[in-house]
Amino acid sequence: MKKQDFNKLKKWEGEEYSKIRSDLGLILEGQKINQKDLRLGLIGLARQNSELLELNKKLSQQLERVEKEFNLLKKERQEKAARKEARVNRKRLAKRQPITPEIYRLLIQATESPSYTSVRLRIAFCLLTVTGIRINELLPLKVGQLQTLLESGWIEIDRSKRETSNHKAFLTREGKKLVEERKKDFDFLFLMKNLDSYVFTSESNHAQMLSRETITRDVNRVMRSVSKSLPDQPNITSHSFRVGYISQLWKDTKDIEFVKQSIGHRRINITSSYVEKLSDQERHKRSNQLEEI
Image 1 (tube, one colour):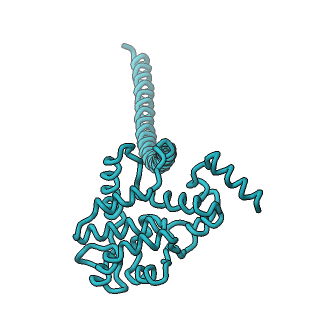
Image 2 (tube, one colour):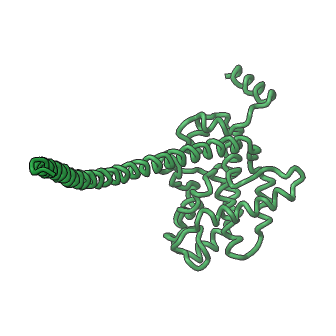
Image 3 (cartoon, rainbow, N blue to C red):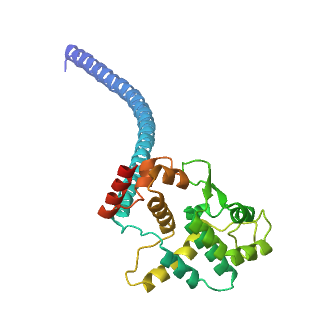
């Protein structure tokens, strides 16, 4: 090989090696850049992942609140529907019949026993009949109020519904007779208790009035028994005393405003709902009375 050719070859090799080194340098530089970009990318992904996790947490909390509000709304609607159904079912129930003198006598007979519970029941039946108060309005009564009833013919009642805060119930002529018949029961109570004691209590604790559930259960138990003993098995409950009182007062007076005030209702339409439809004979009789006036 000629020297000239050898020099050319050596020069070519040098250029090629230089080119290769340059390419390798570019490759290495590119790898460094790629590694940096990769690190930056991974950091970015980690940051995005953290943001997504935080966003997911917030969305979960919002979803939980929405679900809670939805369940609350659902519960309210269910309760509203249940109340509506209860009202409908109440309207479908057989109308409660009033307590008649015959039924009252049978109730007294069914509790003719010297036991404390029987005395308590007889007094309850008597007071419900002669005053027309609700059964839960019996509970706050104290012995001193019974004494006033016997001596003065009236008793002050603490109203249980949105009516007058207190109300005086006056005895009718028939009411006074029924109270007088129960004088022994009242005297028994006066011997056992102080004037400030509750009337309706357990035998051992005169300072604690009975629960509404207890007295309602005891009263209705006897009433169911009496109802079953009658041929027509009337639908009577503790509220039948109030129905009977209002019905009788209306028949005796024919004055719905007087009945309203006597029973303590705020609106006359409430009182009217208790009064049975007048018969043709009753309407004819009242018309004649108006003509005479």
